[in-house]
Length: 265
Image (cartoon, rainbow, N blue to C red; front, side, top):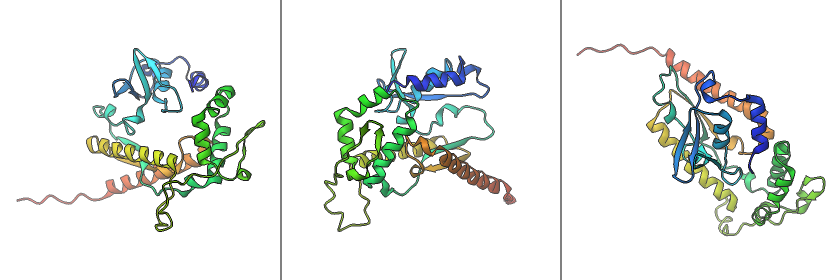
């Protein structure tokens, strides 16, 4: 998707503003797909910086600026601490979306997956062009993915008033040993792909924190929300507030601890 409707909404909210005009210093991070390097936006139109930094691979088309093909900054830098390393800050707070978690079995439950796909489409329908969405879902790759995710037809909801989703049986090829090891989660091909990306981003975030440690780290488990579950915004915001409160309480308790007296030689 080109995300033009999303950017039109962003422009209506922000107006014609540049990054330099913002009351709080701001940096947007994108990834140059041609050079394989991170790109920092610290000057120029704010809407351009946002457009480049939200280009999720496979969902939103990359954004071309000045001969660079830019995509989501999380590809290389899921926790972008480097841009503020030289900033004279009293307190540095990092919010990591790659916190430890347990793998949720709902990824592989046919009925739950179909319901998630339907809810995701409904929750984003106001931002997406209906014709473009139908075109995307009619592609062979999309149909193959949906058929791999699908469960019994009776469990399927509808994508729209005139189009029914008819899922096929879940493909569990390659899991012949699951009966012998019931504690191992069932991961289909899409689940394996997602888990692979999660592991890579978690490793990148750990390396970043080792190089640029934060004064306070708020870790949000990956299982808190899927990438496109906009309909869960209220509960996700509440979870974020709770996690931030816990982290701040921990920081305050550490600051209140008495400093041990120095021992002379």
